[in-house]
Length: 130
Image (cartoon, rainbow, N blue to C red; front, side, top):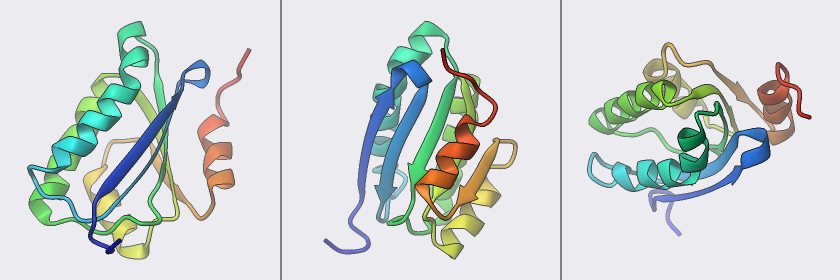
């Protein structure tokens, strides 16, 4: 698999209201809809129930996107916030990816971490589970 080959996998831990996903590769303004569709489909039970969404993403294979694609991602993040996205923790992101994502995610509660363990600790820090 090439560094530019795009992929996305996602799973929901519904009882924790958590979306866990991994993505990477080079997307364009048309193919990025595949990524959005995967995340939307996975989160649908939370959206339908009016529950919050806490996401954690593995960006270890993520690469910076072309400007038009990045702007489309920015719009998606704002829409996700309107549908319940509360916090996003990203781990493993390369430096250039962090820079781009910080630029496009203004207004989103988001932090970057080196490890999944650190990311999960932050994501869950302000919530208690019954």
